[in-house]
Amino acid sequence: MLFCSTTPLLLLQLCSGLSLDTVRDFLTREEDTIVFSLIERAKYPLNPPAYYVPAYFAGRRHDASFAELFVRESEAVQAKAGRYQSQQEIPFFPFRVPFPLAPPYNFTSELYSAAAFVNVNDEIWSVYFSLLLPLLAKNGDDGSYAATVASDLVCLQALSRRINYGRYVAEVKFRGDQQNYTTLIRNKDKDALMKLLTSEAQEDAVKRRVQKKAMVFGRNVTLDGPVETGDSNNGRASFKVDPSLVYKLYGQWVIPLTKQVELQYLLHRLD
Amino acid sequence: MLFCSTTPLLLLQLCSGLSLDTVRDFLTREEDTIVFSLIERAKYPLNPPAYYVPAYFAGRRHDASFAELFVRESEAVQAKAGRYQSQQEIPFFPFRVPFPLAPPYNFTSELYSAAAFVNVNDEIWSVYFSLLLPLLAKNGDDGSYAATVASDLVCLQALSRRINYGRYVAEVKFRGDQQNYTTLIRNKDKDALMKLLTSEAQEDAVKRRVQKKAMVFGRNVTLDGPVETGDSNNGRASFKVDPSLVYKLYGQWVIPLTKQVELQYLLHRLD
Image (cartoon, rainbow over all chains, first blue to last red; front, side, top):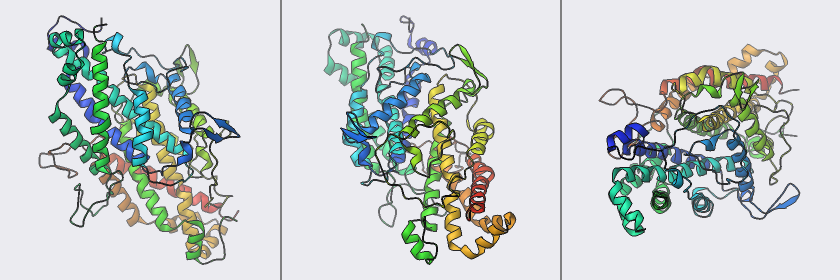
């Protein structure tokens, strides 16, 4: 069994290590990782040849973009290194990932196994390349395609880990209000479930916090300058990534996709 | 020819794109990358099994650590993707890196070709694993070896790019004072060269700036909290990476190793 289903909430938290606090701490810390990764990707120009499909290089035509081929090969190395033995990490290309060759470790599973497969990596992939990247990277081509797509991979992994962590969020919420959730899941009442998963005040706070993080982490820090964020007296301060883009990323994509993961996980929570 | 050796400095800069300003901007921006990468590595505990030599896993004994095997395989993928076609990037394991299969790009070389090979990656590798990592990561083992060594690789690549950029620094300094440097290089006068390469005021400013960056980027940003760095009224603020460690990293390793690269490059500048 993954958890002690008849014990009260406090004991559940002790036996699993999963609680609303640990979940919230994880998501808050991942915000920093996501903002760092976006700032690092924005260091490079768009570098369009890395994303053309079909791609023509190395003397032949490729049906996938250079970026996709790079992610596939990098994920194969990371799979071999055991990255996906942790349920927190989900590859974008799960087929043909090699068997892990890594030091052994007994991971505890905190998810309900029949629902743990839920993820929205396909949507994350599509949002990242189609919608986010054109807003994030400046036009230009400096030829550093490998470094650029390596930083794309770091962004994708951070977004995937954060959004698919919705499974853990849903698990904690389910455990905290089992009776209510069980009824709604049995009735497949998606609207009521989504309502139960939504806290507009909380979402608003998250969006404003990530925007502030983009301001703090994306400033040009000088020895003499102030460290305040936001607009300076001299007009608009310059940031490495537009803070309003990070606000939008969370409001339009990260939070809604996380809630999709939560909903899908719950719909499989009694399987 | 790599540059126009008889033209005045201004024209040199135009024909190469390399100037004291561009070099300084690059190094300042890399500080952010290095601090981000250290903060991200510090997210994971030390995870000692990733670094044991010999390593026992996947049913056999390995003469290299899991971390080294991971870096070797990752560098092979990145080499195939063309990362090392840019002279700014140097692999830690340059042997057997595959031929690049990547979209073509005509990189301009701004280094003197007989000296471009200079790098201190072996020293960086050794400093990183032996001296820096034990001070950076908290004790513990959470089994996330692949994610951990992937973040080691990002740190190593950032440090390598920054430190081996000393070649560009030396090239710009050489071009700016060609007569003086030529005499000292011919005489192999390392002490005088090192003196010419050293500016204690500048180095002090860099150390204090990276320390400040560790404070700004490593804070826990909250919606209500202040965004000031350093000690708060309530005592010492908590940072994800100790700012004094970043000060020490630069003072003891990054700056001295960069100057070693500059010196070695200059000693080959007339070859």
